[in-house]
Image (cartoon, rainbow, N blue to C red):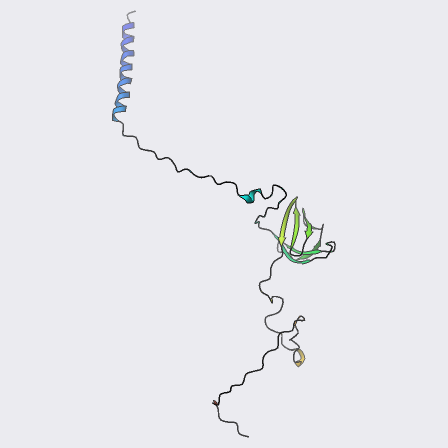
Length: 182
């Protein structure tokens, strides 16, 4: 029993020290900084394009493809149609509906301006590459006439160019050189 007063004194001293430390920290602490709330972000609603594929609509995705449609031979009934496709930069080859372009890639449908390919069940639409200019199939300069025949180069590929206008004569009386003597 002699130790009970000593024990109570140590316990009271520890409580007093804790209380003094708490109040000293409360009195000498720096003022609290104001914290600004982050601006509220408005959540954008779903885009109408996202719902396009819900009920059978086709979703247009811009994807990089290693298939290039070079040409189409489209039949009226669709049975004799062929697509001229180049795969991975290889030479183009003509493929009918149902033929395999690459392993796992089959020609599904052939239309006049595009081809539908089935790649693992996913339908991809490959558009026909458009020409750069109106006269892309005709050479820019005519080939030289063969055998000295005039007009041999005029009919390149069955296309007749419009006739050239006759050269204009100058109506002015001034001449640059000496007059012609006969």
